[in-house]
Amino acid sequence: MILVTGAAGQLGSDLVAALVGLHGREAVLATDLRTCDQMARSGADMATLDVTDPDAVQTMIQDGAFEQVYHLAGILSARGEKQPDLCWTVNVDGLKNVLNAVRGTKTRVFWPSSIAVFGPDTQRHRTPQVTVTNPTTMYGVAKASGEMMCDYYARKYGVDVRSVRYPGIISYGVPPGGGTTDFAVDMFVQAVKNGQYTCFVRESTRLPMMYGPDAVKAALDLMAAAPSSISVRTSYNLTAFSFSAEELAAAIESRVPGFVCEYEPDFRQAIADTWPEVIDDSRAREDWGWHPDYDITAMVNDMLSHLVDPANSHV
Ligand code: AKB
Image 1 (cartoon, rainbow, N blue to C red):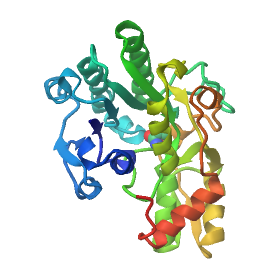
Image 2: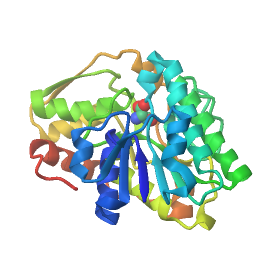
Image 3: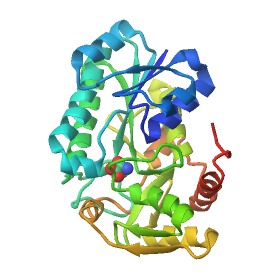
């Protein structure tokens, strides 16, 4: 059995569908604070779970009932700046509850970290796997703390926990909520709907990004890798491509003639300004064979084909 927390979210909904496709619907339990239509569509069993409640997590995961746990429940960066206490509680205490619940079992855990662990002191171009982090957002502080906790539980208790530092994820299913890289998804949606978008970061803002199917593939590949191939128990750098907001707008405009993008940076600009532009993910490539299937052109074409005609679904 496989447990997914945060199953109603952007990554969770796509991951549950992929897990059901691979293992069958009876093998996957999709959980979130509330169940929703998107979760129901995957066919997986559903349950509510508040990851901040240690007893509820312990009861759900007791005695190694699950071979794998994909612990995705979390608060993203922009919301985290508005609700820092909630961000810490969900992202750090929630992770600790899961790690405590699997201690002493053979359950393998996947937990997403983020490029947000890096901060203004970090080398912004080809950011190395091991380098200065010093994040300045609560989300980054929580993710950096979570990474160290994963490494600690792996060393001290032998917990088989695996993690990647996701860049911005672009997908057409469930929209992201409360992130800084959300502008990339919003731009596609508004281009198709209205032919116009007002972007909340400036045009030159360049960030690492990845298409949703590659984000799902990374989680599945890392979880399938032999334990001996995992040399990083904090979290692996991971990326597919980087673009600036104006480069994405131009790529969309080439497929959606007349699309106009304007720029009105808000508080999320200050968050984006502390993150790397390009990530070096060579350790993930060497250790467990990571490689993205989608470059930016393939991503733009696929996104637009799904948004224009939702029948073109991967799952
Ligand atoms: C966010 O923007 O908060 C996330 C992330 C990069 O972790 N997409």
